[in-house]
Image (cartoon, rainbow, N blue to C red; front, top):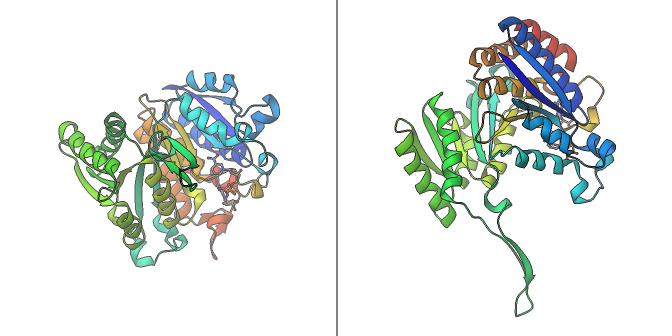
Amino acid sequence: MNCKIAVLDGDGIGPEICAEAIKVLNAVAKKYGHNFEFAHYDIGGCAIDKYDCPLPQHTIDGCLSSDSVLLGAVGGYKWDNLSGDKRPEKGLLGIRKAMGLYSNIRPAKLWESLADASPLKSELVKNGVEIIIVRELTGGIYFGKRERGTDKNGVEFASDEERYTVPEIERIMKIACELASKRNKRVVSVDKANVLESSRLWRRTVHEYAMKNYPDITVEDVLVDNMAMQIVKNPAQFDVVVTSNIFGDILSDEAAQVTGSIGMLASSSLGDTKRGLYEPIHGSAPDIAGKDICNPIATILAAAMMLRDSFALTKEYSAIENAVKKALDDGYRTADIYTDGMKKVGCKKMAEIISENI
Ligand code: NAD
């Protein structure tokens, strides 16, 4: 297969982790006879330095003319005090919008060999945990009407509107159902339907949509406050979870924490086409940039998700996942996941070991 992959290295550790993910993709290409072509474009702080803009037009054009996009991370101390429009994060929001991405998929996976890294008791996580949170990304309260003012009695107020339409809920539910159909055919939908009208519409729509389009999928509802408890009480009970923008934002960070290390978790953002944006969930880690000590696994797993979800290369996805598992089972650890008795390696070495395992 021939695939054109746009690479947005970004700032801080971004270029290091992208280079190592490319190393692993090249090992996959060699073994399975594919041709992956990589084109690099600037985003975030490095783009501000060169073009005075966090998302230059040629970066957008490059992404839109590629088959899929791999992103490192953006941001750093140097650009912390710039005004809103010039900030590196603006590049991220811009590229998601330009690519029409409305879903964010974050698998929070705890590898059995890293069970010690979880803050939860070992009996809760010893058999591994994998919660795949499908978060709606472009609607709800983060994009609703905002108001701030003073009422007729002189009392200052602010409000943010949570608004969802049926098509917005249906399209995110489709992504959740597609994922669940390749897994255990069960979707947990999280809402606050006991209080919020928008959640009552959400609940009705996810059930109607699944019943009509994916009759073999079971949909269960969990209230968001209960979900926050269940993630720490019994995380292994969940698989695919679908929820709104704000609930997904909060719950996906909670689920990530259960797995122990931010350096291990990948995410993808998808829209109506197969072209997605794949990235680690962590930021640009400026405190450790350029030292060859960061963990490249989150970005390597993001690249694996790209192979599976953009290019339907499921065998190759599993090859990367198994190669990561073997590296961990063999005791190799970057500094962030290191414990006594393990073999400490740097970023490049970890990717080299994973590539050799492919
Ligand atoms: P961060 O995720 O960059 O770092 C948090 C902590 O985790 C740091 O101690 C860092 O060293 C460590 N860490 C992160 N990734 C690691 C890895 N792969 N291996 C080992 N350790 C790792 O979050 P932060 O410090 O809050 O933010 C730093 C910069 O990143 C800021 O400018 C922020 O705006 C930006 N950021 C970008 C994104 C993104 O590009 N998607 C996401 C979050 C934060």
